[in-house]
Amino acid sequence: MFRDFQIRWAHENLKVRKTHKLSFVRQCVSFLLSKSAREIPHAAGNVEFDVTPVIEYGERVIREMKASGKKHTSEELTKMAVHKNLSAFFLKTISHVTYHLPIINGYFEWTPLRDGGRFHEMDDIIPLFTVHTKRGVMGPIIRNPHKRSLIDVANEMRDLTRKARRTDMNELYRKIAGTLLWTAIRELDLSGLPMALLWLKSSLWPEPIDEEVKNTPEEEKLQPKDVIGSTITVANIGMSVDGWQTVTVIPSPHVFMWGVGLTRLVPRVVNGEIVPRHVLTICVTFDHRAMDGGHIFDFEKIMNGYFQNPERIFEWKPGDPI
Image (cartoon, rainbow, N blue to C red):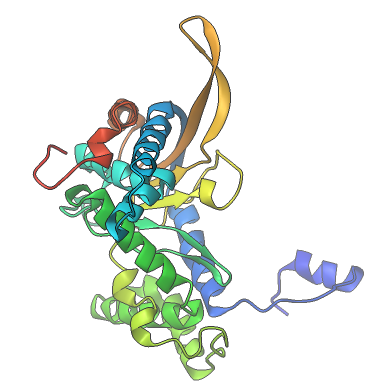
């Protein structure tokens, strides 16, 4: 009784191969994204950027460093790595763009009975970036990449990525749920009740920890502080699949989400000639309650300025203009 009638019909008339019970992680994701889809009026757009200057700049630096013929230090090897793998470059660039568009950095609080709603613009820029692991997608955070050197950002991203691959997601989500639950209780926020029930059930009947990471020391695994507190989300689609466009679901209470597509070589017309160019698609999704499209149109011009002058990110050091 009380089951979805279409599911009941399917069970009575079709052959079910196997029923998969949702893990605690999938239950949490289902709850959070369903809440986001119900409450947030999503608007989205895809913008193509010519990132040939970024690719050529990185290739030139690597070529010059290799031509020196000397044995490279660990710092120099890291520098070569960040000019080849552009994940840290894109994350830092997005943080710089966000600095110039503070309307996208923060939380939207929907309060229809009080004052209609508030946007809390945050002082810190804390992007969450996605890491694909065998146990699912995790989202570590980096604090204020726009105030740090690219090497520093790349090193922390690497360390957090390693920790993510050594972390059992169910165990981590249980810790996060417990941390957030006490805030919900203190605020008497009934919307946290489903999360409380999920946390209670997972605590009474915990799922076994993945054997592959069971004996990993705590300091080598992600902790709630490594995941909670983001102000924007950056989904690196191009690192996971050979795709360049998507429409992402904003994790509430964020108001903006970035999707970084695959950098691909395509023919383009430049000065009347067809030439090969490296093109990147950036997909953005925003909460239409907090802003209109006109508020964010400038992101294309600002971001393109960094892509056409990549040294502004590659060679940036504390004290330089953001």
